[in-house]
Image (cartoon, rainbow, N blue to C red; front, side, top):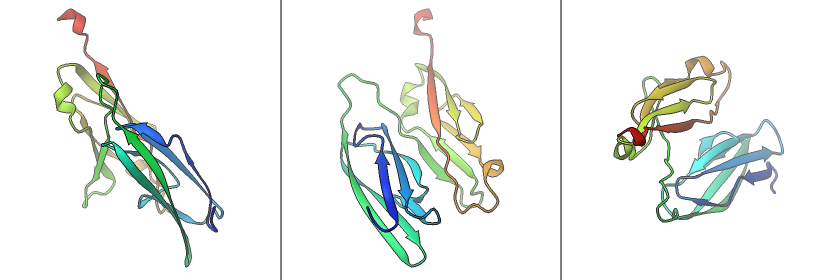
Length: 165
């Protein structure tokens, strides 16, 4: 593929808006720093909110060497009547950088049918929220000497029992 990037694997190249694409980069040298769309980490899940054609840009850096590859992903509209797939937003506090706030845009619209959200933070811990927003501190999960660490975050919505109303 290139001098620093041996292989880039995608779980899919055509997804519905909101679905995740797993991107796995295999470098030719394990010391290379890898970014996917400018975010450090050789394995990431990428989501797109809107239909269209997007490029996922993979960059590998080692010393003065830089290699870059762009791959296209096609994002289509969901089927008519399908529930929207939530996009998880993550924001970092500039003064407390290990505290991440996760949110699901538009989750307030579903409050009448969703009882709660169960969050798996990717570090072995879980959290429950009544709304589509929760914060999590990753301090205990970070390696002391690691330049970057990635966590796969999942959220499950538990629906209310509509049959009793």
